[in-house]
Length: 172
Ligand SMILES: [Zn+2]
Image (spheres, rainbow, N blue to C red):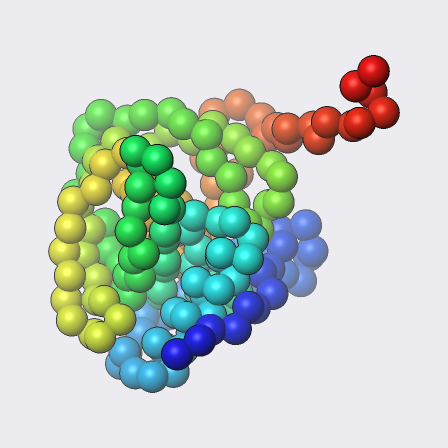
């Protein structure tokens, strides 16, 4: 099955921000429609070079998150979690950089628990439970926040920033 790239909602568009601030509802049944949505989410995330995405970001107010990061030592395998719940967090918190596909080119530092335990359902509807640290823990927390209308800008340590694109005319 192939997915279809969907438009990712942008926080800079007032009507889209309203949707991003909604609370998403649990998935009652993991059926082919949900699996098709998950495929669309992966296509949408990959097209924009993201490492995590939540269903509300493509305008579907359903509790679904995905993540994938196929590079380097922080590799995260293709993962979809339906109705994700964070059931434990470590006392130790870490501050690290985050971005968001709904805030293109903007970054900020966010403090979060270093490790988590989570549970939910996989794409077949089977219950899953896991422990995560590092990048995976951060992405799962960021994406699960989206399901409650919470955005990373709500939790910044400091200001948002951008990496200015190198202008060729300036490189003399
Ligand atoms: Zn995000």
